[in-house]
Image 1 (cartoon, helix red, strand yellow):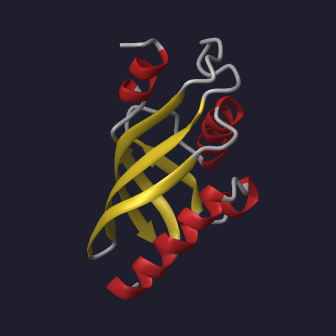
Image 2 (cartoon, one colour; image 1 turned 135 degrees about the horizontal axis):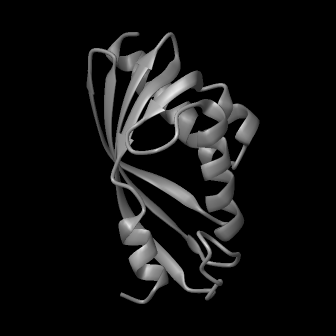
Length: 130
């Protein structure tokens, strides 16, 4: 894909994420997508995302910056939402959280095949009041 195509692809992916449309999100994932330090596969990705959206039903991502090189996208995002459901075994607090997220995607034929990101440490810290 060309750089401009990856920008459009990323906008479409982010739109699906912000609509919380898990079926649409799955269409952006390779079935065996590899994730650094996380279980591989589209099913594991969707399960983790469903867990986040259960805890934060109003969760939204805002794109800060994208850098595209060949088949790779580096994304700086802000994620935010109100903690209304159990997430990672922590009881909801109704606290609004806002976290920086950094993600690296490798996209082949319009599907994410590799991912690494900043993880949940900042989010979990905010939930625990740290």
